[in-house]
Image 1 (tube, helix red, strand yellow):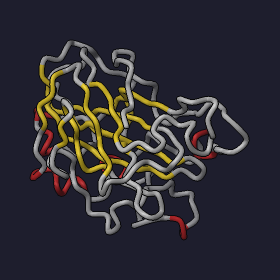
Image 2 (cartoon, rainbow, N blue to C red):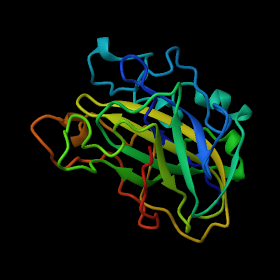
Image 3 (cartoon, rainbow, N blue to C red):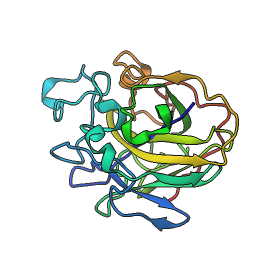
Image 4 (cartoon, rainbow, N blue to C red):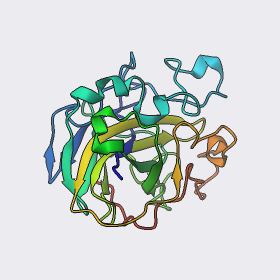
Length: 250
């Protein structure tokens, strides 16, 4: 079986503190913008994806996290799959997603990473309609901090880093990063096209689909950052037990 890895991402801060990921960093070296991350067609790059239950005035670019295909790799990203290069990376290696235009993350909220294996070992032809499994998630790192700002692990950082699990089978994947702003959730999503080498024989689970993983009735959709530090109810499935602990690097 072949895989695609998709990364759910936080985007770069632009005026309104919104952002987008456009660069992959491997072994300390940044790659060119959108070389390995699928570019998208959203008119305003940093606009978030919201739940369809939000007031119509809050919806951007007719894009919904719980409906349609924008929830996979962002709006129109599959149209750029063929011209996006595939990054070869060894299982067990770190990979970072970096925000565009020199931004830093100025939204409180979690970060989540998913992978999805590409059919026929061809990620350039894969639309992300298959199964996704979660390899990492992070929320609060500083319980003494301000829950509306620096209590969150990725606050004021310009990269989010994860590790490709050593036990994930070799093959081509979508690696998806999803960064969220809580309090009427805003979702910032990007996908990198990767080829995992030296992988293992793990069976990633549980799996989910996009759309379908997130719903307006989920606890995270009504979570408030006010009232002090509290447990955050992460959306989507549990992290695959075969994944390692993850780091987050400024």
